[in-house]
Image (cartoon, rainbow, N blue to C red; front, side, top):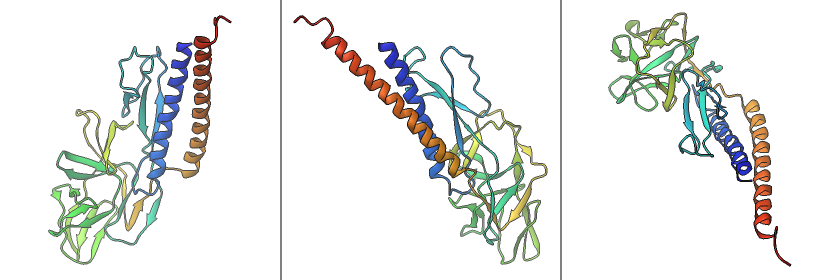
Length: 251
């Protein structure tokens, strides 16, 4: 009986994890540049097949031989979101494969969120105040008429001030989320490639690639599955209680 409860609990935990990931995707449906996550689980005894760019862990954090151990991993869907016109000259979107480069205290990070602004020093920065990198370092803008062409070349009042550094990586991407729509290489040996064929769209932003209808439909399915496992666990618990307290009782 205990084995059956363990197996039902594992199933419930799998559905719970799926629900957490779906809920996070749905909560970021309006986050510019957000990329949705998908979950996958490995049945005990099956070969390990975690894909590149995916991160495996355990729901319970217990050793692998513990009955509740359930290895899973999340994989980010890097497909492009729709482009939305804003008319803001510092809003930039990428059409094609590639990432903007951002300077952070932890090193260079990568993003598809091109909602930029200027800090008090005239440096092009993200909404969080992190410098956006050009091919020659930080980009300084001092002027009114800002033009960014499809190749990422920036001119201000008719004078060139720099070119956006846009890079790409071998696919499938070995990148992991590090917060605020930023990505970092999951493996330090991963190297940048110069993005080929990508176009910069000035005055546009890339929306989240989360499909609300699909996510909500999947959430309903997951919640039903989770409730089914809960009923199984409750039934097994009641059966166990009856076995211990009623079977074999002397009248």
